[in-house]
Amino acid sequence: DAGVIQSPRHEVTEMGQEVTLRCKPISGHDYLFWYRQTMMRGLELLIYFNNNVPIDDSGMPEDRFSAKMPNASFSTLKIQPSEPRDSAVYFCASSLNRGPYEQYFGPGTRLTVT
Amino acid sequence: QQQVKQSPQSLIVQKGGISIINCAYENTAFDYFPWYQQFPGKGPALLIAIRPDVSEKKEGRFTISFNKSAKQFSLHIMDSQPGDSATYFCAASIGTSGSRLTFGEGTQLTVNP
Image 1 (cartoon, rainbow over the protein chains, first blue to last red):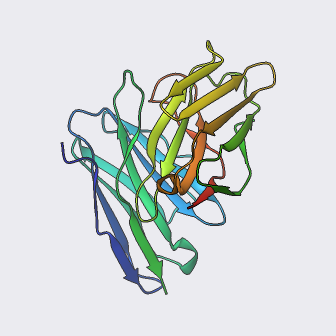
Image 2: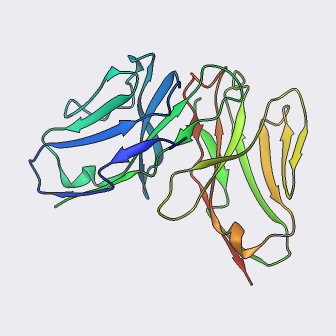
Image 3: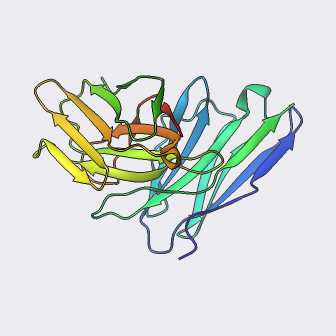
């Protein structure tokens, strides 16, 4: 199994630009999670999906952030317009809806907004 | 009430020593407590997890101790090795993996040779 795949691995963009992060979960997993990691705030859950349906987006910081999951094998996290304070590592994770209840994380996308 | 408090923020241990990381929670509805290990440039990976029906779980050199009445749980790494140097996160959730994981702040562990 290839694990959770994220792209790009690194993204550098200018303030005001649109940024799209992509995730391919592990095949057969029911849940998909988007996290943001910063030194100041640690690991924060932004949004998660069950069977492609958003369940909880209370962690999305503001309207500039949006996430979609058009099918079971693909999700995007979009930031428009981006701001320097969005600079962070964004992780995607997926899991099954049964034991052993492990969330498998992707390698992350390091976003830098200048 | 959803917070999980983790300490210490950083820890330095000599090779062969015991590393201990502590977490405390408030929400008594939490019923799943995993620990994740993260190496630089990588995503977190599940290390070991426990449910509140047991007070201790051991896997190799890693042990979780759980105190339900105190609402605390801890990770013990016996015979710590330089390869254990990583950031460790405790977490908690309610129910299955479909529930959101609430993570602690993380502990950066350094094991000196």
